[in-house]
Length: 417
Image (tube, rainbow, N blue to C red):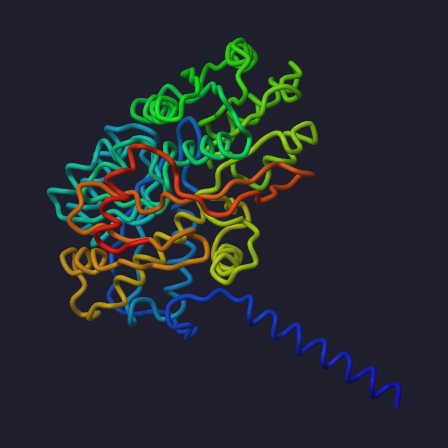
């Protein structure tokens, strides 16, 4: 009898493991497990993979999702041919690559783009060609002020404003120093938003522009701390943020000044990299859900990355952005007759996306048809470093950026969010 019970227990255990594994399997397309074999649908993407930093996490995640989609029936039998090009952080190269994808390869959509330079270089080409860009990670201002580019992320300015709003409401800050990269329409644009908020909310603000390639981290930190601000707000990449925080801790500033950052520092490796000296003293904005959230779509993103991505592909906020861009493209294309998918029909389908819901977003994503600019993701969360991990410390809250007034007005008039 005990042997039978033991066998029954093992059988039950294996059944539960099997059920859990099935639940954890990536969900894409029709989940048929049958590869798509029809005529490929060309989708393009431009990213900054080589250059000052590897900024291609969004396209890596989008590729993983499209690979999963293709393994499960594709778009009604047609596979996606996802063509990714590296602009090397060079506007001229970005323009050449966009012309190739749009004019030569005849892409029907651009999906998952993530670049510091390509929006400015290519916005006019996209408009003239009538191709829509479901960008993963928009960075410069041009990504959010172009008729044909609609990012899934919130962007550095909105993200920094989300962090600043938390500093005002929860940390009761009265003064801030804003540190950002000296990149046109990125750094100044972001800190200008904090300055505009300072006028509206009556706090003091100072901006420091940094050349990341030749930065003296200790000098930057000492300059920022000289005015004894309540908070220092960072808008730098993860690979610059960590050494800046290291320099600040060496000067003991983690004991007297609270540091915050845009979502660019929201990476699972950062709390461990900066160490326990920053427990409850370094806050980051989250453009999407907790990276480890046990919610269905976030778990599906992780499952897709595990099954169809590379182990080396980061599981970060930028990867969430690329996954979402691919999902939105899939939803739009699935509404079409597979024999009639072209740039015109694909663009029309994307324009109909008004209420794309995912637990990774704080609020449903939409394409603002007829609008001259797009910033659908403007509601964010906050997290703080604690015990080598991130601890979520706020619910979703709209960014207080004064520049979003036109977006809020459109949402109200269209009955969105």
